[in-house]
Image (cartoon, rainbow over all chains, first blue to last red; front, side, top):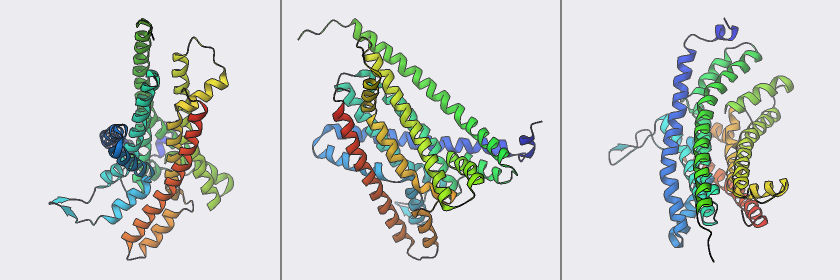
Length: 219
Length: 147
């Protein structure tokens, strides 16, 4: 039997796996809301005029909102018994982390969306298809940033690893445990990224084929 | 966060614990995680430029500088992300503002005011970084107009 696994508590693996699910849940909520808000903001920004200026200001503010501080702000400033039209306003730990990641996700999606449309206008469809890996990368960042929830007691994967690491005697064991964490987070994330890259490359090949087949443009 | 803790776990036995060591670990972790993302964005841009301009001969430096221009939005996004990530350094004991104000807030009755000030301050700091990054991005885009 591996000595590291002898030293881990018996319920470590199920607790860790449920913690990893919490990380993915937080990132899933943040990217879904971020896509909805970000694409709306990108469309508004490209519309121009007053709407575009207002959207650009909102994006700039969201881009600058620091996640960790927003999380503490949401937890400490909203009273626990606050309601709006009878709906409780106080956020659960998971929702507080997800909402604190929303400004980052929305601003990133908006910026990447605007960039993708500008690339398309410049005649670079492959440049615009970079939107797909960019969104996947945003999801990566959100999953890893969701570990900020450890600071407010959310039972997410990294917090469980850190608690377990405190009970291990040597640095070598701790590093081995961290490596286990990297593998469990890394495999699903890298697999997702590989699928998205494959999809993007297929789309890119189709676009290039259509370009080559199209009759030459006469000016 | 895990990168941060690993960086701290590796650096501490070598140099002992001090604020400077925690700060160095934070810089290493933030730099590695955001730098790798920005690097990946540049490599993806290189692939698309190569595919689009397969026929034209383009030198390594020209290709790289065009890829920098094309991935400017991503590079800036990760520079901003690094600046935004600095409060997380409090997790391993780096001396930064959030941890100091959390201590102050725990003894204070004006928690809302303190956290509002903190939010405004950090947002302003990141906006300055955004402004500087915007200038950098404009420079990248001006240098290589047809990206």
